[in-house]
Image (cartoon, rainbow, N blue to C red; front, side, top):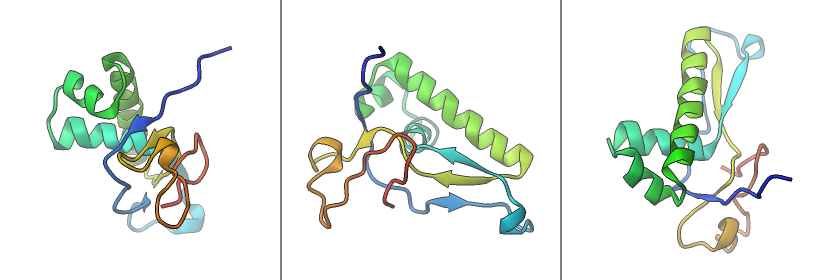
Length: 121
């Protein structure tokens, strides 16, 4: 039996929960799912230009785990860009800093936990 995942720290939710290519009807479009922690890994590595060791510490994971999350996120984004798919940002195993375990205690009472389900954003 695998060890349970520890939630990864993310600084905040996404500004948008989906991106889609222009010119393709929504009902005809395939989609890929980018977990919230994947978006955070992309932000830390590619936007903030942090090295993997520093970014991993910010997310409260090992460097190897950060590298795996980052590689998976880049794969999802590349597939969406090349194949013309919509990117839906949701789910994952993460917590927001200062709101308690799994995001509980957030105003409104909605937690932010989920492996593959809706993130509540």
